[in-house]
Length: 315
Ligand code: NAD
Image (cartoon, rainbow, N blue to C red; front, side, top):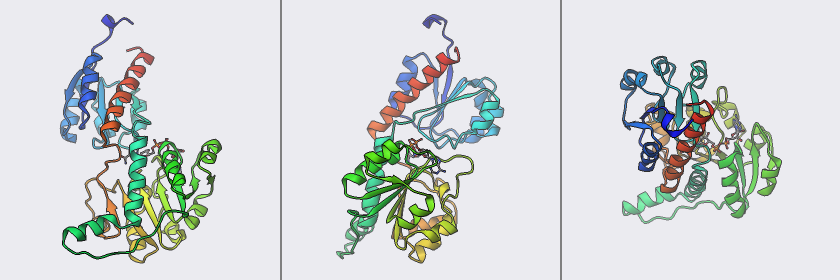
């Protein structure tokens, strides 16, 4: 199809995105409405007018939203996970989904390592005390020579493992798919989830959330964890049973928890706020991909994949 014949696709961008994304959409002929703070009620009213939705993780594209989407053809997730989209229902309406897979690998893996060091050296709590004029040492632990257990050895898991390996940690991983070539590159090996929990000094949760994979780490699994281990979660909070984690943090089985994700974003439940308030817990507000470089890559990958999909389905 020539450029002249191409349909003008009405596109609703529902979450805050880098300017580059809007520029790239405009320059590729999309007719863009930018509503970065749109709420569910308004989205339900407006969605019927659009061919393309662009969302990050804030906007929930539920069955209720999709039922009103009369002309929607593609949902572009400007990021990685699609757990905020009812993918199954979208498929029944022949609505296609594209993502920006790989765009934030470097940023999220750097954050993961940063959270690990911050947690084991207690950097945030010591910094808070310094600011309160309390000049007092607190002892941490080294990561060198320790066992890092990676749950979900995909792009981010592998990128994190490369850094951890260079820092002198021994890597083990649990994944439902195994890529032996990749794990050998970081001198690691695949193990069962049980073995990973029992052996790791620090656990990194980096898997993709799918139907049925939530609460991978519940009360029973937390009881298997090596006493005093740390957990870093940059993937999704749903992998961990929150109240059970609170209990494990209180009784010392888990020495500390650092996460870029929380069960309700923003937090709502009392137990959730109690976890956040603990001194041995670090929480960042889902900033894994919030770097200049990742946001530019997200914009570029999303628009490229959107155009590829349009060509594929003949739009
Ligand atoms: P990826 O697809 O490359 O890797 C995910 C890995 O998880 C795959 O190897 C897959 O086999 C594995 N997996 C899936 N279900 C599993 C299960 N039940 N148990 C064990 N392993 C399982 O994805 P990626 O690019 O590495 O991203 C991983 C996740 O990181 C994303 O799905 C997203 O949730 C999260 N993420 C977070 C941020 C952030 O801002 N914090 C940014 C990007 C991605």
